[in-house]
Length: 127
Image 1 (cartoon, helix red, strand yellow):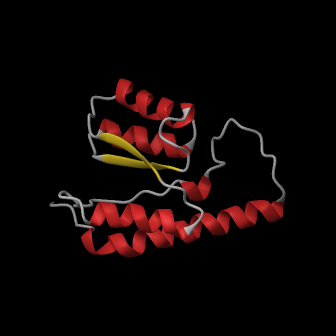
Image 2 (tube, rainbow, N blue to C red; image 1 turned 30 degrees about the vertical axis):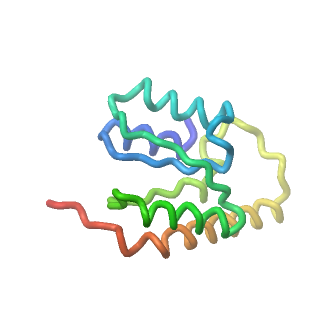
């Protein structure tokens, strides 16, 4: 099972509020299947998905702005699985090492661009 799906499934089992960002439109079969799978295999009703292309900075800024200005914007954690997309993927690799490195750099830039604006609303869990 892909690492990202495994992480989402475990968080959903713990009834975490999940907003999964998908580089594909949410209506796409792949994104829709993942969310439907999580909803049907857990009791968590707080699973949502949003389309956010992680390549250019503009969609990332738009998502962060919408999240920061939402009525409920408390953030308990951020989990990034896009940095290790290949782990557990059933799809064969069709890229060159140079393409892989460019994709890796793009994903880690996305991590920085998402984390930086959301950091001020990240709250520590109550122990």
